[in-house]
Length: 81
Image (cartoon, rainbow, N blue to C red; front, side, top):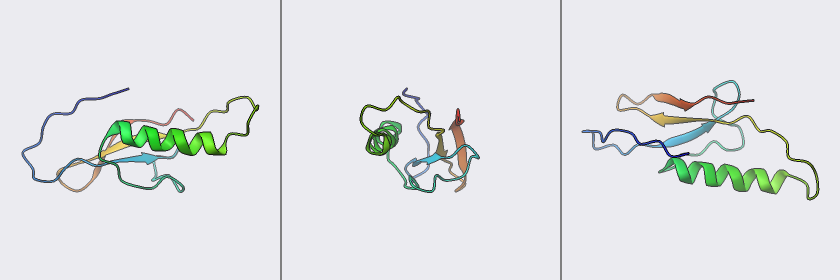
């Protein structure tokens, strides 16, 4: 799921982070990413490493935030968990 954001006049590049079902930085995935795709790829790899082979898939509640020009974070996708 790619989301396009308007290009900012700021010199600060946008950063993305994964958040848990409470909207807080995820304890195990608390890193900053350069793109949405990079963040989801990292989360997918993490999830695949945790999922036992042959076990039914389980839901993982992850949301996504983007950095703002003011230094805060804005939710792009709320956790489904």
